[in-house]
Image 1 (cartoon, one colour):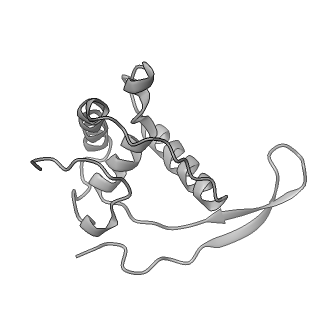
Image 2: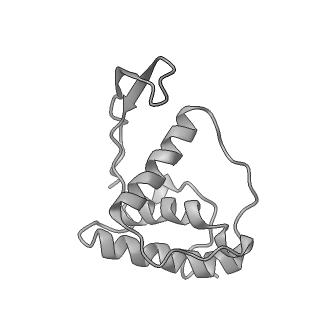
Length: 129
């Protein structure tokens, strides 16, 4: 059974811009993610590190994951979408297990692989030929 059958309404509040340029709307949304979906978001944020020669961080915290989600949500809300090339198989082989491991460690009680229909990336599936 999918978690996200209907989107929750967003709420908004007028707040001062963090750089003092006036008033902006701070939008808060509620979105439920299973473990695999959360790992896919972490994967997406770091997928090009191996191809770019950047090392993956040894330590990922809950704050790191929340920053990734906030950045991705803000970019989407502002209409900015990256159209970078798909990650290579080498990146998938290196980054996907790394992302899974961190999500399992940080959120051990999350259900895994609930939202099969909500994939956000075209990535090879585990066990797929």
